[in-house]
Every structure is written in C-alpha cells, then in structure tokens.
Length: 87
Image (cartoon, rainbow, N blue to C red; front, side, top):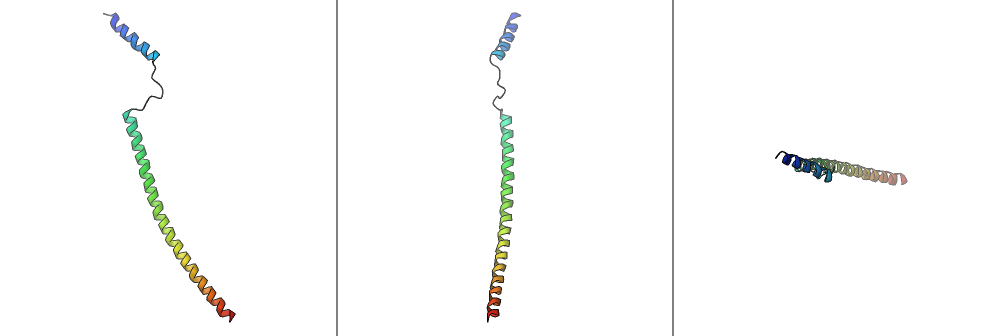
C-alpha cells in the first residue's frame, strides 16, 4: 500500500516533466474579465474624449463663422471706400 501513493506521485511528476504547462498558458476567467474591464474603461475614456472634441469643434466653427463674417463686412467696407476715393 505504501508504494501506491509513491507510484501516483511519481506518475504526476513524470507527467509534469513530459507535458509541461506552457509559459503562455491561456488566460483564466478572472484575467479575461479584468482585460474586458480595462478595455471598457479605455472605450469610455475615448468616448468622453470624442465628445469633448465635438464640443471644441463646434466652438471653433462658431468662432470661424464669426471671423469670416467680420472679414466679409470689412471687405465690403474697404470696397465701398475704394469706390468713394475713385470718384
């Protein structure tokens, strides 16, 4: 009977040597869940950044429209002055 546990132990050790666990074993459930959480956090941050960029773009477009309108008005004023001076 004493040799039976030894034989099982030897068999387990031998199997470990013959069939080693690869260093890059498949991730377990906890690791996968952690990775999913990380990716969800990254996606959330990216979405927030995209929303902030949209708001900033809208502000910049409004500023550009204002500047273009002012430039157009100033251009019209310059044209009117040139016509007056040309008389």
